[in-house]
Length: 177
Ligand SMILES: [Zn+2]
Image (tube, rainbow, N blue to C red; front, side, top):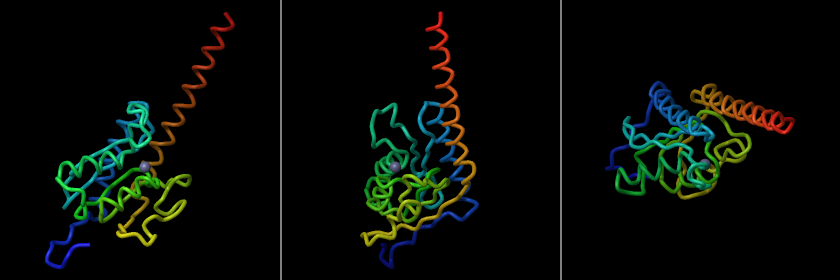
């Protein structure tokens, strides 16, 4: 929390939220183009983008390389401190427990996500990290550009499945020869 003398953070309104979510979606699309599950994130302070991040788990061969972690890491470096209390995060997919923990640790004021993650979501779907009695409780908003964010994921997995089928068919053809 901030003291009363400090300026309160300016958080994005719903129109701005969609614009920032589109930027996060653009990052997600870069992930997809690199063969990664499409998830993108943007850290914003007072209406300005401070840092972006995207999923790079495959390329980095690193379980920690989630979009939110990269965006938070870059935001800390850009702003020269670990407390991002004036900032908010936009991410195309509901954060997992690791990223929700990082969001708490970074003292982010608010998190806005697009698609729900019924399997791993830690901001309402599986459980609510931010309603636990931790040192900091970020605000959470879900479902901004939900359809677009979910579609990015479903079309990625659909393409992946089709490629796998094609590959196994071409392997079978080779074996038949
Ligand atoms: Zn995560």
